[in-house]
Image 1 (cartoon, rainbow, N blue to C red):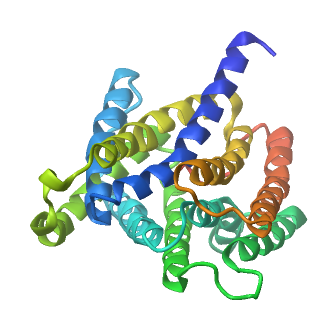
Image 2 (tube, one colour):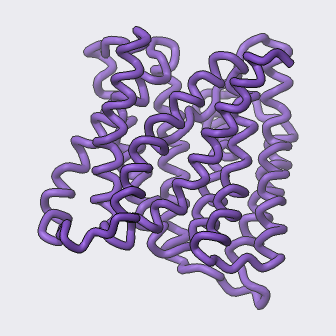
Length: 310
């Protein structure tokens, strides 16, 4: 492996570690900030990174008038509904459970693409889905068979998953005409505009910076700079050099990183059943992605996938 290729792999793995840490930093940010405040600040910070990067490398496309409605619809499902589901869901479930549920997005996307765009499904897609959801059940259920987390929190996390799947199916209409970073930059901008009214009405009356702790402030900054900025840039480099299929294999590291960091930093309980569930989810994800790698080798073209979320 050449040094340059090794460097690309390092950047992709680093992005996964940073994204895994973002579920933990949300919990820290939530100690001083309400969910919509966290999301609004996160999008505000990320916009500077995304537009700055796109403009610097001449990767920012001009939006065609006929496509504005698709960009607005895209921003409505993600980041607007996605972050509402994820942010409020994470106030009710642990960081690890949240990361595991979100990690199922790549499993569900091919099924949505099949029904809307008639994209082929492989046996591995079905097998991966069944295995991974078995793992999810192991994570969210306790030994007695009851839920180990708030049912509403789990439901909200799956709202985020379905929002991300819907986003992907909308993006398919735009992917041939716009660079990934153009799509992500504008979805962040439009998403921020959607969150500002909620922020002004629901959050500003409760915002008291005198009560904000330093760790919470740094956590919000981290989410904007790394979670929605630098991570995407690293992933964009990986997709360009390695292809989408190979790069997205590393997304399976996110719930593992979150689980490890949650155990040490948040003192989150990590029973054996949950650990086994995490690895079963990852096994299902890997099996489902085998078909993507095969398609890539046969067609020399990356199959359609979920663009890394924010």
